Length: 386
Ligand SMILES: Cc1ncc(COP(=O)(O)O)c(C=O)c1O
Image (cartoon, rainbow, N blue to C red):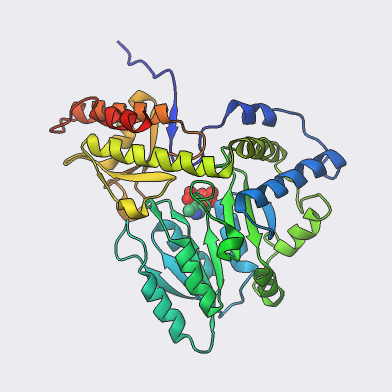
C-alpha cells in the first residue's frame, strides 16, 4: 500500500507564515500602473499603516526584497568605511549583520551572548560604550527577536544604554515586529527593519525600514556606496506616492489588506495573541518530553527552539513531521540537528499548534522515546486556552 499524503499542510515555520484568505484574495487582482493615482493611494495607506505598526512618526520606506535587503540598507545609509560599531550578537542573524558590516569595511566589535539561547549581558555593552570617550562608536546593531535561537532581546533597555552614549540604535525587527511591543518613538529607535513574510501574514517580497531624524542626519554624511538601497531615493519617490523601482504590486496589495486586518484586531490584541500561543507552545512541548533552548524570561513570541527527547535528532523530527503534513524549522548553524523550531507568528492559530504538538508526541512514540504519554502536550495547551 502506498503511503497516504496528508490532506493539509501545517506551516509552522518562522516565516513565511500561512496567508489568510482575505490577503490571498486581495493579492489576486490585475496589475495597475505603478505611477498612477490608484497605486499612489494604496502605497500611501500601506506606508501610513506601517507607521501605525511601528508606533512611529518617523519615515518608513519599503524596498522590494527579503529582510536581508533592508539589513544592508540600514548599514549603507548610516555609515562610512572605517566607522566603528557594536553588534549585539545573539545568533545567526547577529552574525549576518557582522558579515554585511565587514563586507562594507565597517569596524565591528561585538557583545556576544554567553551561549546560544541566551541574551547579551547589557552591562558589557554599557562598559564598552562608557569606554568610548571620543564617541567613535557610530551605531549599535541588534535583533529584537533572534529567530535562530528564539531569544527576545530587551530592546528597551539596550536602547536606553545606547541613547546615553549617543550612537544610533539599529534594530532588526524582521521576525519580531507585531509579536511583542516595539514602540519605536517611545524607545527612541533610529532604524527599524521588518519583512512582509512574518507577522504581516503576507508572502515574502517587501521589507520595510524606518529612519529617525538622527538616522537621516547620519545618512547625510554616510559615504558607503548605495544605489538600489538608497533610502533618500526611496523617500523622494514615496513622497510622490511612488516607489523608486517597479514595485511587487501583488505583495503591496497583500500588505494593504494585512494592515486593515491588523488594525481591526488592534496592536494590544495582536501582542496578546502572540504571547498566549508562546506560553501554550512552551507548556505543550515540555509536557511532550522536550526541553527549551531559551529561558522563559527571554522567550521569543514568534518562534520556539525545542530540544527533542534524548536520542532524537532535530533533523529527524523535521523530516518525519512531514508525514503528518507539519513543516517545522531546522536548527541553524551550530544548532543544526540539536534543535528544531516551531514558528507561531502571524496567521497561526491556537488549534493548529495543539495539533502540531499532538503530532510530535505521536512521532516521539514511533521513534521509541521513553516516557511520552500521548495527549499530555495538547492537554497542557488546551488547559491554557480554556
Ligand atoms: C531576525 C531576522 N533577521 C533577518 C532575517 C533575514 O530575512 P530574509 O531571509 O527575509 O532575508 C530573518 C529571516 O528569517 C530574521 O528572522
